[in-house]
Image (tube, rainbow, N blue to C red; front, side):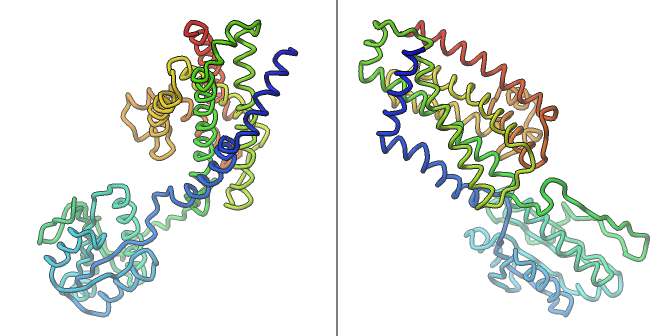
Amino acid sequence: MRTLRFLLRKEFLQIVRDRTLLGMIFMMPLIQLIILANAVTFEVTSARMYVIDRDRSTMSLGVVDRLTASGRFIPTAASQSLAAANDAMLDRGIDLIVVIPADFERDLVREMHAPVQVILNAEDGAAAGVTRSYVTQVLARYSAELGTSVRPALSMGGAGRVAGSPATGGAVPSSPSAGPMIDVQRRGWYNPELNYRDYMVPGILVVLVTMIGTLLTAMNIVREKEAGTLDQLNVTPITRPVFIAAKLIPLWVFAMIDLALGLAFAHFVLGVPVHGSLVLVFFSAAVYLVVALGFGLWISTIADTQQQAMFVAYSVLLVYLLMSGLFTPISGMPGWAQWLAELNPVAHFVELMRAVLLKGAGLADVARPLGILAAMGVLMLTLAVRSSRTSQ
């Protein structure tokens, strides 16, 4: 125990005296949190719009005005030529084309419904889908104002090349508003303002804790290999468990401090709600860090240099992050990918963090991901320690 105390003191002093490492631990996560919390979003705040108004009536102007007034669509150009609009989309100067056909107002007055063609640049399928939803909502509200039905006929273009004839695929069925209507009242639970930042920040915190727990652990032990001090330690009376504990405990402590700073910044500066128990959050983080630290320890057993450790860590962490449900929902992945995601500790911790912070979930609600993390932690740390013994 006395040996462990001296080794811990030595490790803490090494980290505190290394300004570069200290900056990586405390400054970089906060900078990344500020940038990612505001940049990582699938919302479309502004879409450049090309208008082809072949009716030039009061109601056709109302369509353009309603789209512009929503604040999400910016009128960039207007003409009567679909070819010119197509060239503008091909040059990536616009994001969507709104084509209002001739006799638009006459059809609304006489037949109570009329089509509006909306051509979207579908290179980015996610952004195109969100933009389509916004257009449909705006036109639905305008239809309710008029007491008629404005039907958006949607067309997706790859790099902007679209057909000259009106689109029919993807049209939203319409019916006169004279018949019975169902008034749907929506209410969003857990994130009533539909703030994408509230959804992303808990996952970003998981990423930052993972990077510290894995990368720094791997590089810290590999640094001993490069300096040649690891061989010297192997011939001392220091046991392997004591050496590993002295290496992992300081980074475990700093990762927990980083999580506390990140949560405080997210709540008081970014306004991210904390509905659940902070005790549960930190207890879960403590369990998860055993997995991250064990993974970093395993990397240190197969890498001989810090460059190798960094490469291996980033290669594996990239797959972890992309399949964690942070950017795309796991439920939307193929079946085989969903099974693989069950082996991803990042996915379970992201699920747990979002449930506790946004939903106020309790221990019973997150027992499954917490239990999986605990089992992974024991397994990963055991394999890493055994691998470390055989590799040295």
